Length: 421
Length: 177
Image 1 (spheres, each protein chain N blue to C red):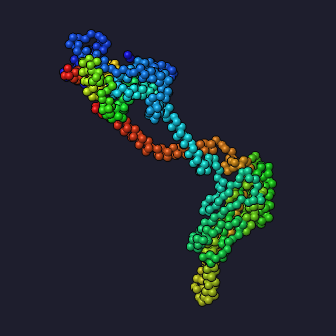
Image 2: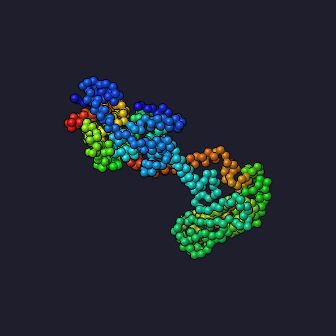
Image 3: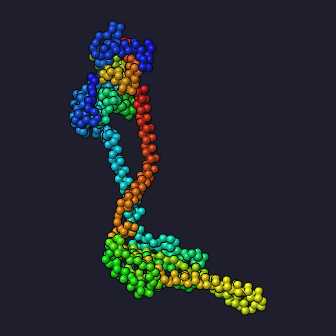
C-alpha cells in the first residue's frame, strides 16, 4: 500500500484511520478492518493513568493557581521564575525596561546639562572675548555689596603680539599679578626693565531702579577721585530691567585695583571681569624704531649740512622729510601704546532687575523664547544621549538577538532529534 | 473531549481561570497519558505533566484562539516539556527506566493477556516519534486534526504518519504472535 504525505491522502489510509476512530468511539467497523479495530482497543488499554495522589496534588496546585510552592516549583525554582517572566505579555515585560531606559536618559541628560552650564544659564563674562584671556567672576547674586572684600581675580596674560622671540616663556606667563596697574619689573630678554601691560575691566553693578542716580553719582565721584576720565556715559530711567547706566572709563592703571574696589562698593556686584594684554614687545619695538628713525634724522641733518651741490641737498631733504614723518608716526604709536599701558579702560554697567536672570537681552525676564531654547537644548542633549546609548547597546542587542535565534533553532533541532531518535 | 478556552485574553482573570480549570479537568489524564507514553517513566511523567500545566497556567492570558484549539495548545506545551525532559536526560529515559513502569514485568506476564503483552512490547520498540503519535492518538484521544496542530504538520501528513506507525505496530504484533 502506497502512503502519500501530501494533502491528498490515500483512500485506503483514510478508510483505516476512520476505522480506528470508529473503534475508539465504540462504533462497528467493516469486517476486513476488525483486526485493526481490535488493535486500537488493545493499544488504548496500555494508556497510563495517573495515580490518585498525583491527581490530588495537581488539583490542589490548580486550585491554588500554582502558587503552593510545592513539588516542581521548588525543584526547578529558576526555571519556574523564568517561566513566570516569560508568561508576562511582551508589552508588560518591556515596560520596566523602557522605564529604566527613560530614567537613564533623563539622568544622563541632567548630568550633561549641568556640566555644560545648564539650561538658562547666563554668560557672566560677555566681554571676555578676543585674543586676551580673562577669567570672569560672576558675583553671588545674594552676596550683597563687595566693598570690603573685592572679588579676587586671577589674571592670565597671553604672549604679546610680537611673539615669543622678544618675550621668553617665563616672562609671557609670569603676569599673574594683583590688579592695581603695577607694571612688573625685572630683566627680560629684550633688555627692557619695564613691562607694559594693557588692562581693561568689565564691571556690572545691580541696584534698584530708584537708586540708579545715586550709583551714577558715586561712580563719577570715584572716577574723579582716582584722576580717571569718563569717555562715555548714558543713564536711563524706567522700571526694573529698563533703568540703568553705562560708562566707559579710563582709570590710571597704577590705581585700577583701588578704583575697582571702590566702584564695587557702590552697588551689588553682578559680574566682574578683568583682562590683561602684554604690550611690552610692540612698545619696545616701536621705541627701538623711533630711536633708529631719530638717528637717521640726525645723520641726514649732518648730511644736509655737508652737502655741496643742490642735488645732494635735495636728496638729503627728501630723505629727511620722509624720516621725520616716520619719527612722527612712531612717536604717536609709542605714545598710544604707553597710554594704553598707563590708562586702563573700564566698562561699567549699572543694571536693575532680578539678579538670577541678569544677562539676557530682555532685561532678565525668562521668556517663552528662552523656554523654547532651553527645551531645544535639553531635547538635543537627550537625543544625543539616546543616540550614544543606542550605539552602545546596538551591538549587545544584536548579539542577544543572534543568541536567542541560535538557541531557539538549537532547541528546535534537538527536540526534533529526540523524536527521530 | 474538545474543550474551549471561551474567555479571550482581554477578559477578566476569573473567566480565564474558569476556562483553564475546565481545560485542566478535561485534559489532565490525557496529558499524563501522552507524556507517560512518550517518556515511559511514571515519575518523570508526573513532573512533566505538572510543569506543562503550570506553563499553560502562566501563559493562559497569552492564549490566542486563532492559533488553534485549547487542547492542541495545551498538548503543544506538554510536548515541548516532555521533549525538553528527554533532551535533559539524554537517552537516560530509555536506558534507566527499562522496563518502563507501564511495561509488564516478567512476573506479571502471567496476569496479563498474551496479546496485550505483545502489543506493549511492540509499542516499546517504536521510536520516540512513533510512540508520540500513538500516545497522542490512543492515550490522549486527540483527533487527527489536533495531532497535526501539536506536531506542526498538515492533517493529511499527520494522518499518514499515524497510519504508518499503526501499520508498523500491527506488523510487529503479527510477527511476534
